[in-house]
Length: 146
Picture 1 (cartoon, rainbow, N blue to C red):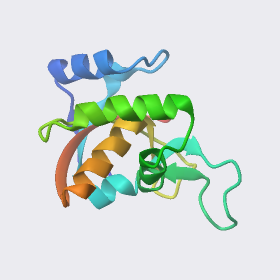
Picture 2: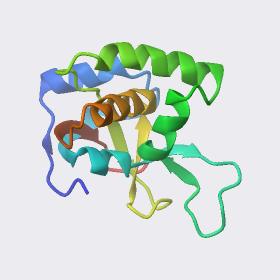
Picture 3: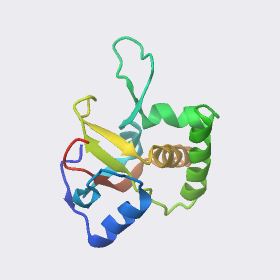
């Protein structure tokens, strides 16, 4: 995943920095990559971990696991508020959420989403409901673990 990357433009970096409250992260080092399919987005791990994962499974939630939980009203009050705000944004078919990934040794994919998880879940759910499979979603990728 994210083998093909390019430097982010000044405009893209400004958009990323405006989108995140990422104290301590070197966002200016972010590169651009792409997630081609909704299934690939759904399979991406997040930094959110299950408190008691079943034996033999990864402890970090994927977007596909979190999206139906939040859609059904699960999670914390913060999760529900953030998910509702994200749904309003992704209602526009042309909207692309700014998603930020970083490498990690803690997931089988070697990557995890470190921010904008509610936006990704809302995007995933709305596009899945619309029958969208190809998304060609541009994403920001940090070059080093955080």
